[in-house]
Length: 184
Image 1 (cartoon, rainbow, N blue to C red):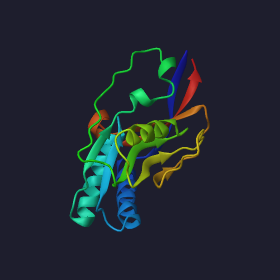
Image 2: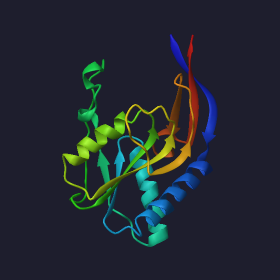
Image 3: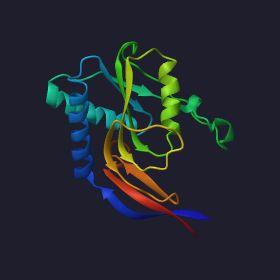
Image 4: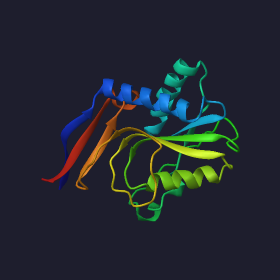
């Protein structure tokens, strides 16, 4: 039997807050403001992260960018290999994304397959001017040529490790933990 054992806390609540504040400033700077920006959180933890980034942007610019929610379940390339029945949640985009700059938000960037699925889903819904990627953690090990435009923290990991993000909205506390798979 395989178990996950917490190895190291790499970000606490203050670290997450600082990383998201920096990401918000970088989004505003790169895009010379937030006109025509739409933040889109990838279900599940990308949603509260995008909401927090939107709050930070509102504090910086005095305007809150529109927020969307993206469910990529049906776009996954491993859908046929899953041993459980996935639950499909709605995708909610508050505006037409055509001609807009979309900032996709997710918690951890690993192989790039989740982002590939998100790109496919977005393109099916319109033709954005551009798509940028913001992630709290980039852990490496890419299988696809995808990179984040905005990164909270780069964390080199071993393949036997995993990175777990805990957010107060769903997990009662904010922290990011490296976990190791151990036989037991």
